[in-house]
Length: 58
Image (cartoon, rainbow, N blue to C red; front, side, top):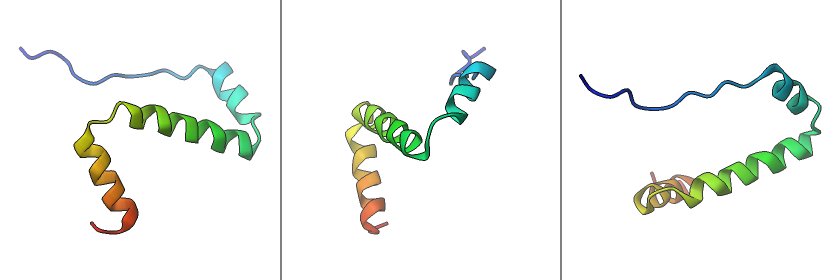
């Protein structure tokens, strides 16, 4: 039998309520920080593909 892959995350009601109180600017700032964090762990090939998508090459 193979091991279960992936992950799950439960967002508590308290965290959801706190997020709802953020201003649109704060939400965008949070999103940008998360993007930078995730990109820092992406394999080089994935980063290359993302850049090509942004430039409209693929």
